[in-house]
Length: 211
Image 1: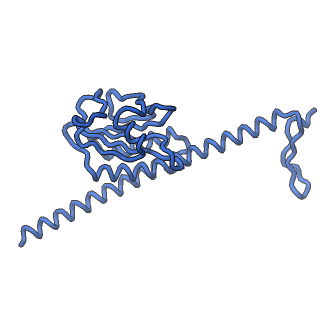
Image 2: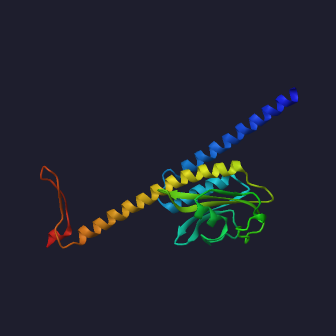
Image 3: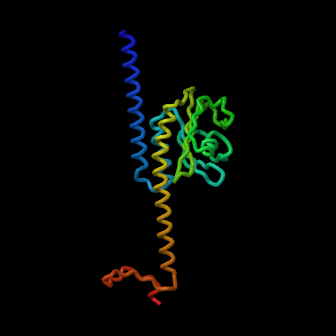
């Protein structure tokens, strides 16, 4: 049957276009965060890359601070919620459980924080560092449009890239802090610190040598 064959071809083409868009988005996110060494830069770059692709969505990146999720960067919100207790909202539920969530109709979800008008559906995906949840990306859709399982799958993949980049940035921050602490200790210590090669060449003398 010609109509059946045409329908199958159209579905196949649509799947191909959808997969191409997903791959393009993931490549854009990966390129945006690849060289970022600050957590804030990773999150802002990822959020902006996603929203450029999802023109109808608004997106916020949150990090855990104690028992609250604190907004680090957002695009598309007129009034974004700056602080969310981890016991509240769809984001809180995703962070507590460690599982990505899709709420296709926020009007029937008891956890939805309904402070933002016009929101139709919401996706929240946790971000991990070494197996621990450290925050989340929260996407909300407006204008009567609804997010789907395909959107959820894409956001999970995005958050995997973001998690790797955030872990790298946190490691860089820890190494930098360790180096600065070691430098401060050696430069201010009363004891003499000397770094010498096996050949006898001195590579470093701490300021204590002046005394």
